[in-house]
Length: 114
Length: 117
Image 1 (cartoon, chains in turn red, green):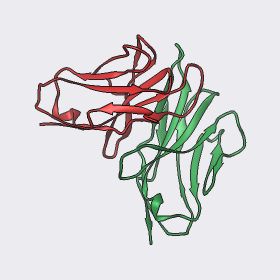
Image 2 (cartoon, chains in turn red, yellow):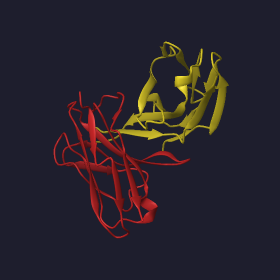
Image 3 (cartoon, rainbow over the protein chains, first blue to last red):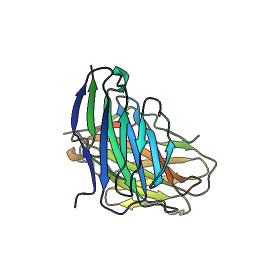
Image 4 (cartoon, helix red, strand yellow):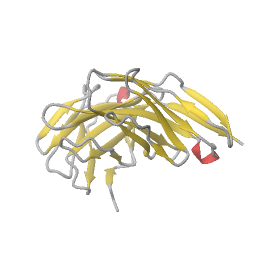
C-alpha cells in the first residue's frame, strides 16, 4: 500500500549545493507531477510528465530539472540551490493518459536552503 | 492559462454548523475535472470530493457536497455538521487534458478552515 513515495522527507542544503528529490509510485500511473508549496501560494506546478521520457514545464520551472527514467520514477533536481527554493515539495501521480482522475500525493519533502 | 481562485484565505466555523468555501476557475475547455483536497497539519494531501465537468449533478460525499455552476465557472464546497477534524487547509484544483496525453493539474492558493468547539 505504498502509493507515492518521496525521499528524503527533510533536507537542509547550503546555497549552491545540488540535490535530487526522488519520487516513485506503485499504482501503474502514467502521469506524474512535481509541486512546490509555499505559505499563501498554494501548490504551484513545477514540471509534469505524461509518460517515460516526456516532461513538460509547469508554472515555476526555473532552477529545476526533472527526469522520468521509467514509468514508476520521476525525479526533481536542483543543480545550484538558492534560498528562494526553500519550500515543501510534493510529488503526485494520476492514471492518465486521456483519463482525468484524481491525483495521489507523496508525503512531501521539506527543503531548507541556507 | 488555467487559473484557480480561492477568495477566502481563512475561515472559521463553529462545530456542528455549516460552512461554504468558494472557488472559481478560468478555462476555455469543455472537458475537465474539479477537485477539493484537504491538507491537515500532517501535510498529507487528501481528496475530499471530485466533480466531472460533463456531469450536471453536484457531487456529494457524506457531509461534503459541491455547488458546481459550469457557466459561472464556480465550484464551491459545503461542509455540513462541521467537526473538529475538519480543521485543515482546503485546496480547490482543476485538471484538464493537454496535448501529448498528459493531464495538467493546477491548484488555488487555499483556504485555511478552523472549526471551533
